[in-house]
Amino acid sequence: MLIVYASRTGNVGLFARRLPYPTLKLTTELRVDEPYILVTYTDKIGEVPAKTRAFLTHNNEYLRGVAASGNRNFGPAYALAADQISNQYGVPIVCKFELAGTPTDIQKFTEGVSALVTNV
Image 1 (tube, helix red, strand yellow):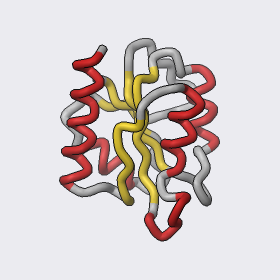
Image 2 (cartoon, rainbow, N blue to C red; image 1 turned 120 degrees about the vertical axis):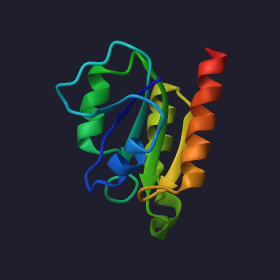
Image 3 (tube, one colour; image 1 turned 180 degrees about the horizontal axis):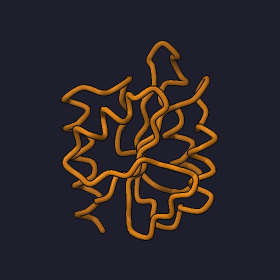
C-alpha cells in the first residue's frame, strides 16, 4: 500500500521512513491514482494542515485510511487531524502517534494497514 505523508517539522517524515511501504511526500501538485494511506501532522490546535486539505481536494478518490501525529500536551486536540479527515472522507483511522512515533506505533500502523488490505 502506498503511503503519502505530510511533514512540517520532520517527525512524520521520520515515521514514514520506518514503514515497510513505498512512500511519497505530499505536495499540493501531487496526483495519486492508486489506493493510499495518508499520514499527516496536526496543525495549530487540532487542525488539518492547509497543505493537506489542498492535497485532499484533488486526491480523495483513492484515500483508504489516515494516520496523524500530534502532541499529547494538546489534550483533546491530540492528532485531531485524523478524526477530521476520517469524518470528512469516510475512511478509518489507522493510528495516531506522538511526534515521530515509537516502535509500537509503527507496529500498530502496519497492523492497521494489513487489516485494510485484507478487507479490500
